[in-house]
Length: 325
Image 1 (cartoon, rainbow, N blue to C red):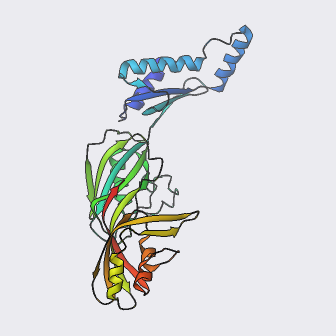
Image 2 (cartoon, rainbow, N blue to C red):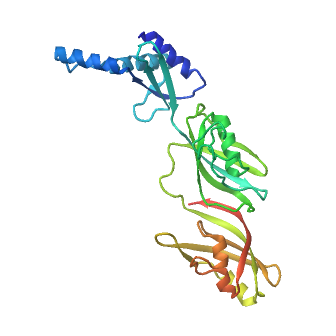
Image 3 (cartoon, rainbow, N blue to C red):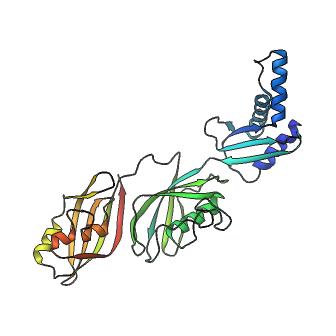
């Protein structure tokens, strides 16, 4: 086992396009080597001397730091290189894994018919494989697919995981400043993302705003301006329009799996299209289930059907703007 050979393998592996500022090198040695070391220690009653593994990794880390000018990080390095030495003490393999890259961005959607999310790849159940090009996604055209493929191409990473701030339907538009989202890219080679990175296709425009040290630990609260298209079975009375405009300051109440949820409406503007159709623009806390808010399902109170006094249906809704609190 030659130290120079091991170090050359490490450098060759890292030269394969990795960007990093901090590193850590670990090692896995043959079991027989550990057994011999334990035998020698027991024979000479020497337990204080540092192990072969510790001496090896210390020397490799020192050399690597001196040559690359990068910093050692024992807790959360940008790249972790693990050296495995075969049982014959000759075969050397180096496996490099990098810290996930976490990005914050926004997107707008100006074309209808594009889903926000998509299903997992059936071949790997979302883990990433050759069939899905390591994305874990089915390949169905969606906002998620557009963002994932572009970021994987830029970072040379795998298996993107998204955290969305709210959601919309396939036929909904997303306008204004766009919908915020977070995405975590596994094992990226490229970590330096251009400032204010912009891309998109099919009416979807994406802006990557910044790199984050970690994902938010709790759900991000937000306020959404939503335009709701409503169709009622009965003719809409003038009093009903006035009542819908009076939703400002009201709280919408509905039940989750474990508790009652309360969301405030800050603004409400209504426009009659004809006797049975109207458009309602509301500014409200994010998380209101729009279709249930119109139809009154799932114990949602107040709701548009109740206020109008007629069974109503949400025929669509668009997101006009989103503000993170």
